[in-house]
Image 1: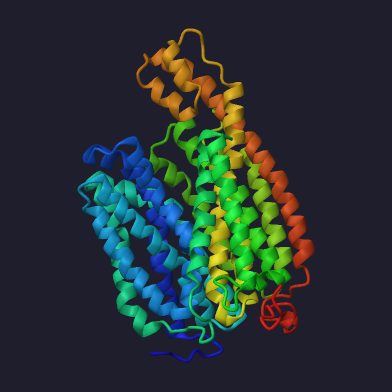
Image 2: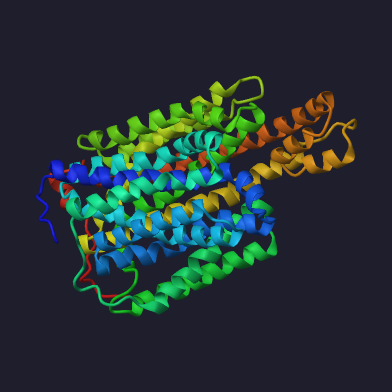
Length: 521
């Protein structure tokens, strides 16, 4: 059943957006609640350290690896059809994870969740592109969708903490089941179907090459973030890059490629994609530092830290909704640039944090970062989706999501390594602290907090004071580097995107679509 979508979206289309946004919120929450549930499920299932790593990592690896495949598969077999398949798989895997009785069962369920998650993100975005043909309405729809996705980062710890306080660890996996049920019931009624009739059959070799490129690269970056610049993670990253080169070469030769690289020929598309990746790299990784600061420096519980982060979510909500409206009068380049200046101010505020400043300073800096990121996320996503032809919307959405995955992973690896290096160089444990506790505390602030639990109060305080000071020094340097780099990104975006007119302006027809009739290289 295919619905004809009018030039202007009406009530039906906005209801369809609500159906798409709710699962997006729940998928985002699912990423964060596992961290809260991990200690509980580890004790209950008796998971080893290796099994714990698989439980936490398999979701992200498979989701990142399958994004490109699933985004383009929706263009081929139908976006609504694939979305509903993904929703059914996500709901079933969530139930399986909730009632898993062994670590292997939970790992398998998380793997299915990762593949299903790779279906949901690009499918929802490409369907938004189909539902909202008017550029102004599409901008607002993308803003609301992005608001739901980012809100999950803070709502996740709050919801997860509340569930774990009253129910067993599996309850956190059931959060997404009602939303998927709503999608399965309302989706066939409200969502239009769209597929590219000339897409051709999926190239399985390209699918394998894309997996071989993305998964080792993400794995290598994650290991670099955790263990530093060691040979095996570097080899994994190099292998991913090598397979990516082979993947790109194959796409240029195929008549019906898995990923049409001619999308990158459009300056608006490639610049917006690079901006999204840079913003995620520089700002996304800081969330880890901020949550650690609130919990390990300020001594807040996970729920208390989440509550202090709520002002950032409120600022983000305002920014995501207002940015598309302002883009109707002002050029996207100037709005994105101005927003990044606000984010730079937030990063500068983070350089003024300390043990005596309290959580208010951290919360203020984080709120400014999120307030300024709204134009970057909403308007860049709008440019990415608007620059791609309708039949390539799934591919464009997949690239948008994949760039975010790489930006976040690379940010953790690079900025995390800087923060860890500063901590190691600045931390000097007092001579009165036992050698075992002092050696453990040298690894990280989290290890210092763990070691301090077994010490008398006076020795614990003596150990934690320099550890917290060293961690704060790392946060200050990472924030300063991010601020300087983000300022450069703002200048480049203004320079490269200043030709793009306000949303819906007459001259917006210039340089907004990729020419897919151009010859392949």
